[in-house]
Image 1 (tube, rainbow, N blue to C red):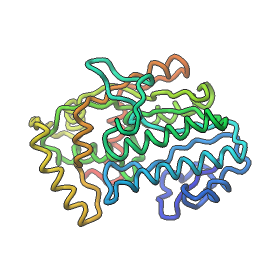
Image 2 (image 1 turned 90 degrees about the horizontal axis):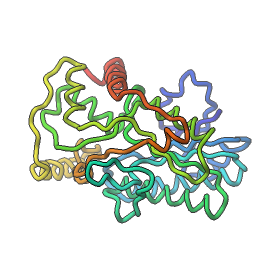
Image 3 (image 1 turned 135 degrees about the horizontal axis):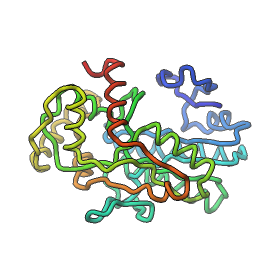
Amino acid sequence: MRAIVRASSPRRNLEGTGFEEVAGDLRDPDVAGRAMQGARALFHVAADYRLWAPDPDEIRRNNLAMTGAVMRAALAAGVERVVYTSSVATLAPPHGTEPSDETRPLDEPGAVGVYKRSKVAAERLVEAMVRDEGLPAVIVNPSTPIGPRDVRPTPTGRVVVEAASGRMPAFVDTGLNLVHVDDVARGHLLALDHGRIGERYVLGGQDVALARMLADIAALVGRRPPRIRLARGLVVPLAAAAEAVARLTGREPFVSLDALRMSRHKMYYSSAKATRELGYHARPYGEALADAVAWFRSAGYIR
């Protein structure tokens, strides 16, 4: 087993796994080509997962360049099976009370924010290579993974850390589909074995209102849950100010205008297709939340 890792990336999550490390940038076709030699299967799980950047187009360029280089290398090396990690960001949000699913793909202009647009563009690239070049790829669309080993942390991991640390006194009315990261990993293996080439599969868990998520985090750490629900219009100036500060510091803001726009929809999704075709199941979201809080605490993120 091999893993491509940038020279500057932390190796913490690879320790003890037995992976052979290939140092380099996934946007570099030569690096991707070297790593693919002799490989029978490929999991492409890397992405530039930021909701804000000083140069927003950089996120799109990175995700397209990575996906293109890796998929072309897989074709050239004769890889037998590819599992491409997309996102529910490529699917339209729900209508009314019904969760969304694989039958509702977005086009790029319809996606909110540069991260979502970049994931739509990359997924469409993979679909085109399946259709036109015979790329043997199955697409998986994780919802919102949480759990241990979120080293960076991801934007959702930051919400867990901030809430557990008592730094989220208020919230907006929105919701997420939360899933244990280990269930998402298992879903990738199921897709490798049972997924149909060219098909996409939502790997989700449980639909949860943000208010409930924050209350459950508070209960895990012995804090009072936030009670103040803010209208989005009141948060817009805060998000704009946070982005202005971020442009000066280079540090990603905790709340951004794109994230606020995304929050207009409850991001609820169905994994029925993955359950039916792959045998996929996810544990209750509370277990994922408890594992996330316990890991962040043990790693020193929560004091």
